[in-house]
Image (cartoon, rainbow, N blue to C red; front, side):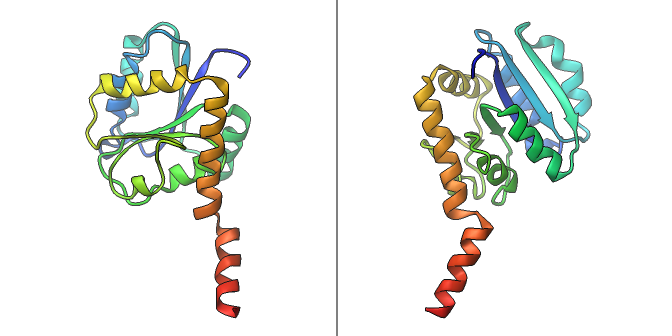
Length: 182
């Protein structure tokens, strides 16, 4: 990035299991950098986020974009080039939202719940314990912000490669067909 404005993105329903409140609490501790949290999704916790924006550092901003069709999410990822995707859910299957972010080379910070560990590792992002404290989440985000450009580029490439090798339907289908006919 040319500017020092850090972009964090989340994409989920704004419901308790997604722990949007934990993201919000964690961001209160990100004081030494300029950042924006792009919130994709809608639900009952939207009001809680809007009511607590004033408690965040003055160098920060939150953009509530609401629920979007997939093509608009992809367009946003392509245009905005978020630095980090955040998912602090208390429960997950294998999160498609993480796969989609990785397909755009966006590194991930996520909790170690459900199948998340199958996607996220220290090469392509940050895997947190299942129930992290807000200060710990903020520290890991700050650690990511502090990486040099080549380290961030490496994480972006690793995120894309994780998607491309393991979850890209075109590649998987081709490999499946080849295995059948071999």
